[in-house]
Image 1 (spheres, rainbow over the protein chains, first blue to last red):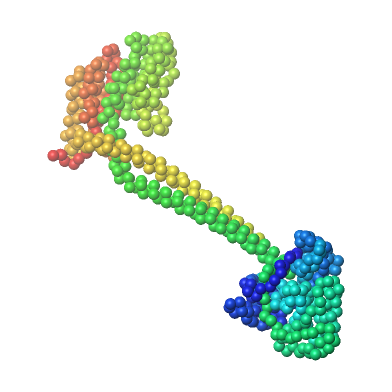
Image 2 (cartoon, rainbow over the protein chains, first blue to last red):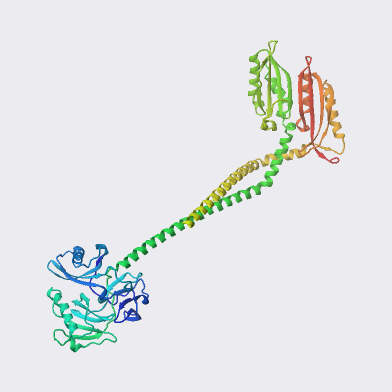
Length: 426
Length: 167
């Protein structure tokens, strides 16, 4: 994991607070208005500052590695692989390239070579230097308004640290071993600058600035004793936020963010499932309510018409009950007439005609079997009789005298006898 | 895991209950729709049946059930018309029958008549006229000695029972 940082720092680019390490504590700086930084809180531990997600955390110099190197390429897209190769050669890379948290900044170009400053975060950065909610990190010198072409030295969490700039760009930083600002420290700084100068990474011996904080004892005379370096002292400046985020977060934070993202995704899925379930329950409940409402509506409509329907049905029932006295087509004489009309001139005669309110039974004799069957068929197919009765002809029987006896039973349509399918015997 | 199983079980039970409830509601709606359709069909014939009900109200005879005068008049009518038609009339029974939930009460006469077919037809046609509310409940015509036929008949008069004479 690595990213490129564009140059430049701007105090006005302030979208949140900056948590930075000071000489003996952590400080939280915010915007007092109109871009003026203001110290809001000091605490012994970073977590006590309660960083917000939009805040930036400045990682102490002692917890990061700086590497300045010329890379033989003028194509910035190759820088990442080249930088990673350099880190692997120096043992600064993690187990895999993805497990390496770093970012780089192009400082200068010389022909086909580019000078690149790389900041590497340890694989196992201690938990007291990061916060799970914050995703914006930078090494602490990147958050200071450093002098151009200079060396800045300040006390950070009990130890002196130095940062070197080429032009306005941070080219190197490191912790100093010397516990006090004196001649020994000047020698150490000179030794730090020597390989940079030899590697054509800085132009000349830069001026040194000490950033004084409360309680610092700086012996400028002793530091400048050798005459190699001249030093000045200034107050420790408020932090500035890099214009562009480094895009590099400690591995632990990255894992935490991935975990959070997964959790959020699972939570979203769970919410979506719950919403779907709720919607389904509401849909089913709504359907039930709609069916109930529909049932009530139908019942109300039926009840509204019920008196008129009942009165009409009563009239129908009464007419139906009195029908044998009212409808001439159902009179016994009419049935007898319709039956008699079907008799041929010769060969068939009726021997019994029996009728009641529900049934009719007709018996007769025919000279031939064919005549008997024909009469039964004619009776069955007669239009006037068919609408009144359901006919059931019996099988004709031959008599000893050669004639044929026949019988046909009729059950009045809609009568109780027809619905119960009782015997047609009268 | 246990909660998931419990949740699943509750859902299965709830779904089953819901499906049963929905099926019951749908069946109820189908029944109600059929009932409504039937009601509308009946209402579509409302005018027709109201007219018939009014006709019945105006034309169905009323008999005073507190006396037997009307019954006797009917029985005498049956016997006299049979004889007038040239039939030999033999009374087998008869009398009043209360309405018992029917829209009419009745008085009936059961008899056996003998004669030729023409006389019988003439007599039956006298008995049964639409506005007279007489019903032939039972009729059995059997061949006798030609040209005679034997007829067992049960004829009734259906009327609206009232207490006392109507004005």
